[in-house]
Image 1 (tube, rainbow, N blue to C red):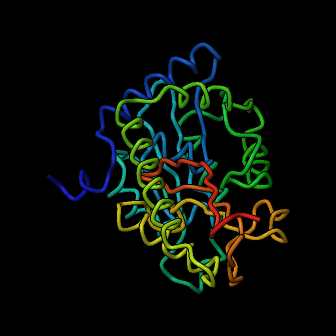
Image 2: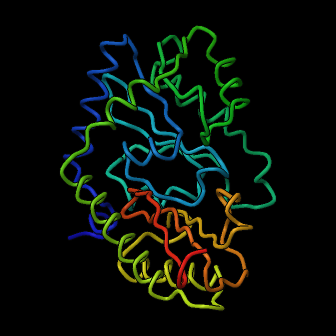
Length: 273
């Protein structure tokens, strides 16, 4: 088994199935291409996992009649080569840090899209929500391709991702199992005088020990205890000591191979007050 196969959580045929479904939806919507930059969509259609999604754009482009292509900064090329099944990769940037600011990523993206004959195409992309392609960069790309029509493709990506494969279901179930175990062990560590952070450390350590993803994809955790903290709905764990009578809420979950679970549990130290 090659290093490339080891670093990708899904086989190539599963991605090909996703691309085929996307093309079917594109045909119905009369779209010539999808350009995606939301991390969850790029991961779903490519398998690429990186910590750089919100530092610079990382794009997945799927045409109806061409192989998929990734566009990314130069420093991401090695990661894409080893974590995805995509062979077509276009990059921008330089290894010379003194010339880094001279690189125009929009120019590279625009030229690549024109080479794909998308300068007069109907293109679906993400026009809402958090994405790595900033609105101002998308605006510049659209200015370079005035004869192209851009529309929101969120309905297409949501529809495709809604139906989970067998592997996805296995990953989601495993995320739930890991989180359940971690919450249980965290609750068993509750005692008078322990801090919220100390309990959070027990939970995170257990998640990692059982195979949960590492930060920044580890998931999220809300943990709070005591009456004065009850109104802090999404508070991070603090150095606050928990005392007898406190009701503690643990809320969140881990990710496993990119798939997240989220639920809450309540506990008390002694008799709740």
